[in-house]
Image (cartoon, rainbow, N blue to C red):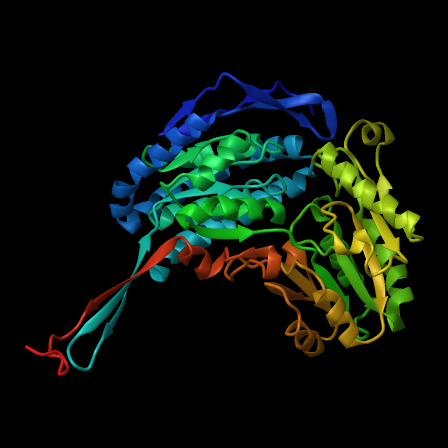
Length: 493
């Protein structure tokens, strides 16, 4: 599918703001095609956006929460109407299969609607009457200007996960998307911004200097970032001088443990396992990226896994309805995954190609990589200890439960994990894993529930998104104490 390139702009104080410089975004499945152009904003334009958000904050914070919810609901309905068109645009600029792009919008709507339906209850004042006649009010006040920096792998959902709670809580925002998937998210943010007063939601693009301004400007009260752990370290240093609030959802070399009581003959479970490794070509922070299987069922598990993978994995043009896995998003990520696989081969591992390539000509032209299974890797090989973020996965044997838990926890990361087996047994093991979320007999987006908090431990992040916590994280707790006045006996007159 080829159409004329589109052009998106920054949004500053309610208006689109064309820029002198732009950058092209190619189609990863067909790099000769330019899907569209995004703006290259300057640091001065980032300051303008922050100033607009700061100016809009007092009146927006004073706006009744009922009105905030109504505006967000109108934005959701308009975004739903635009989803068929925007899903196609997202698929073209990202490389993911069309069904996957449509699914990303679906996840976004689940969260945005949950936030709208629960925010009034979550943020209502807590009033405690005291026996002596006094009382204490605990209020949840908005923070101010929030800067949001979002990645390319799930640009819509990882933007709306921040925009919805921030605006509903009474904050204003400046959002910066990734240059590797800037187009659909810019269109989506324009639809949302149009339903709010000028300056409440602003959008800027750009290079490192823009990111620096968003993380150092004293008018910014909170940073909401999803992306790599190394980038987050720079953000934390940048924000230190002004002690900003932060929510950081970072990398995760997410592990899966397969217990000896897992039923390897359950075809639906095996299909679920394959999807947990390869949905969006493995380019999801919460994908299962290393698999530990009890040695007693290891050979049978691998056999059944390959069968399931070969049935489900079909690589090709993202607009082909038969395709389940599209292109890798960008050549840098493609090269990195290839290096990990080659490194494993050199170390003596066996690399097995999975699934089918539906069109060799399409495959050769784009940033495609046939999914692979890596067997015989060592526990400390790069493909095991580094986050691949692409279509490859190592499967390794273990001998006992203690070893498996130790291997899983021996990581700087702790975003999500999964345990596969008899439920009660799996839950017991899950309690010992160091991760923000552990799923039982499922993993990745298949097990995501927006009603409950999501985030990592260790170097996988700080704070939580989704659930009640995902709303409260955009507020400051404000205690208003109304004591019954009485003299304190130890203070002299």
